[in-house]
Image (tube, rainbow, N blue to C red):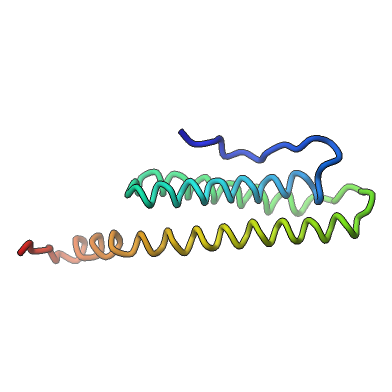
Length: 123
């Protein structure tokens, strides 16, 4: 149903930044899109599962980002392209997150009402 939430691999020579780091961003973006799809379907269990996968990927990204960088040709061009790709990915993740939060608001309010002992009355 969903694509595996692992960093993607790229063919040698096509990366515009550390390929491992960019692949983590792409995997987080895929998980974010899958979360949005699950939220639109009202499948909150799947949203929570994918959120856990995102937390793991973000942790792995942070760890990978702390590793020493390898030398690359055309570092300035690659750094610029990497920044652009990262920015596009992060913008899509933020848009997905905002929509997920919007879709979750009624569900969270119902949960809050239930936990507070307030029950909905049907008219």
